[in-house]
Length: 226
Image (cartoon, rainbow, N blue to C red; front, top):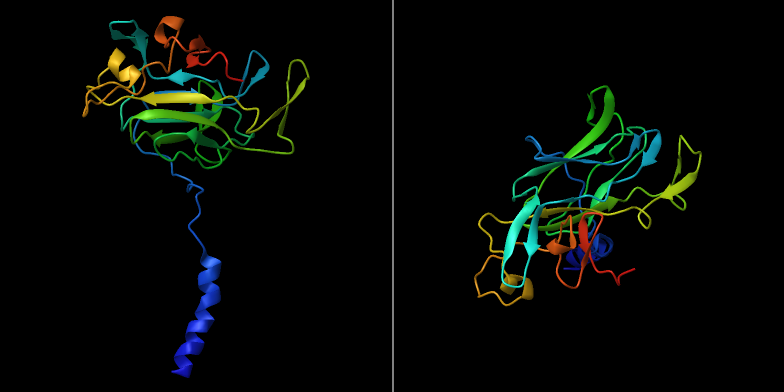
């Protein structure tokens, strides 16, 4: 009996050290299959540095009082693959979701990982399969002190890119055959209705946003928000 108690006491510190499972998502491998869309991360355009373009990829809808109709954009469905490309392979980038219906957490997108070339321009890529419908908002989590130092090759100006300053991008996914209606937008749809997740998310004009939001850089946003 004494021997059993001693063995149990010896295991207690190990149990205490183990603790709860970490909430940090695991790094995900690049998904197989061809991408439906490609998203550019860091790159030089006309000699000037560009960070993540805060693009909004997804179906756009024209919102009217009595009807909501598809108006453009790229339809994304569960199972589609998006490819993130870092066009500055020597500059590290890590794509993760600030909000999404499923974990999204990339490896370090830096050479030699998945190094490729297109039209003479090298890039590092990572592919993510969108498992569920919803809004995937992503950003670059690669941080420095106080951010990653970037020197503009044309003007010589210095900026710091990091979690706090980096722009967010969006990929919005709808279920096939989903319903886009004023009742869905107002939260009054009958029980069991599969409402489209992308209504009032991506836009080119204010007509594709709800009355409380406005179209800014391709996405419907609250003008009162900071």
